[in-house]
Length: 388
Image 1: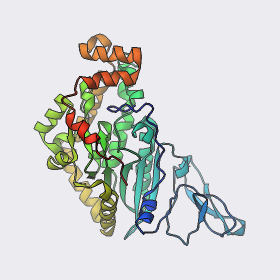
Image 2: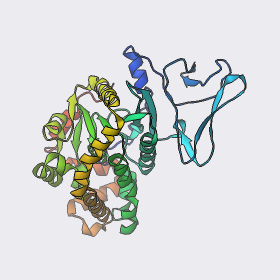
Image 3: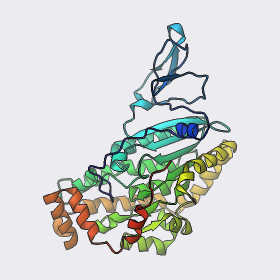
Image 4: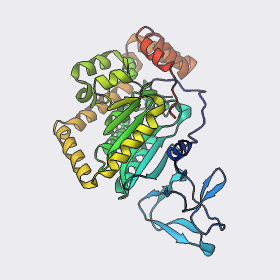
């Protein structure tokens, strides 16, 4: 369950087509780098794509290990190679459960792609996913070959928000306020992993980009949106804080307060007009536009790109941006840990329906109170929503 969209029973296969496979369909070359295994036939490192063995003679796409130890390729008999971990604990790309991490050759160096891969939950941001996201961002940051990082979502949308199967456990329930505050750590850590990352981070967003998903997108250095993208923070309707404190800097205080006080949502064109995104493109051109941008960034001297990012971010650091995020996170935790009698009557009714009929019914009950306000959202959601 995400913060806004009920996803129970919304089954959808996980991402089966990588960025490289998409480029293959456009006439380019590429392979999916999610498996490394030993095979005697070709005398080299093999990667399995639909049963085919792709050797290093094909375009180089590397499977990496995210760990505190080192990655070593060892040559076996017959010329094959296998990935071994010299020390420390870690995981290969195939071990990720909630994301896909790939690197692709660019004009200079490589571009890393991180795909949020929980499409059956509209890429709801669970704690395990956020932990993997932070690890992958760190992997891209420490890989000298990577010039730029792209974050995208598998399936029907970028992300519909934080996983409410976790978030709602404290709403009048057993989770103490202190535990609630402490458990918000992963969210703040991934934001810092983006903000302090020496590499430019691009958000490639389509369709649902709501609540925590919107937070993730707006903390990236550049956000490229499909024209069917939808932005907003609906959780304020059930006593959540509007946590992305970077929004007032992006859209201005007046617009930020309007969204915070109403839970209203805006289209991609509105988001562009108010400065929430960097550019809006047709949905079927999103992948190519982001790749072109990342490829251009790869041509720039990495040192100057890093220093420019650091200089721009320093201004907002001095404004106290992350201090504001810490306060917002604390206030949100207090809100989620509130006892039922402290909540407005309407939210007590939402909790009652949820307890009696389940989370799907509870969210439907809540959203029914805002039918008129959400007409623009319903119209936007009726548009094609799958990115290429």
